[in-house]
Image 1 (cartoon, rainbow over the protein chains, first blue to last red):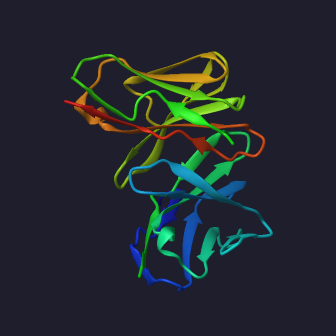
Image 2: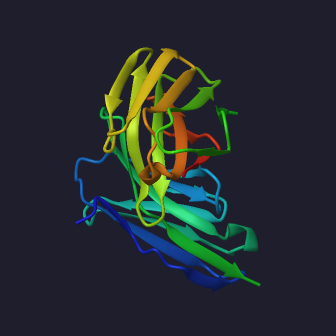
Length: 110
Length: 112
């Protein structure tokens, strides 16, 4: 089983739709979780950290479910500019080791 | 704003050449990382450094070495480039407090 698993997609959604991605992780000792956004042929950019209590930033909401070992990203009112690949990342504190998922591709259609 | 820069965006080298990839960050971050990214495989850690002159191997260190002589600069060295090292190379840094990584723009290396 991969350490971090994501549905590769693509998720094709119309503008204005709500879309959600899940990411499962296998290491129960993982402490820190992040969502990164990566545009084609560009570097990953931090979208948001995922806290135990959840995290919301505008149209984006991230949740952590420790019991089932997954994190989620919800995007409301999708924009064309949200089209990108979304990477899930987990880290165990003190190890400096980050495990990246292979990403979920989102296409928002006009 | 954190800024991580990499010396080249695109690089073409021949098999057997020694290749240097440079990364510089301007935020006084303790930790720096080198990854490679390949389609379907995601980002894989080559080496990381938690302090000047300190380094640790990541998941795929074979064929690579690193150098960190100054806090802001972390270099990746391909001792003898091979075609299977054709990839996108990404440098990242983090404070080690927030654990949020910041990436450079990447170097797309082609070895022919």
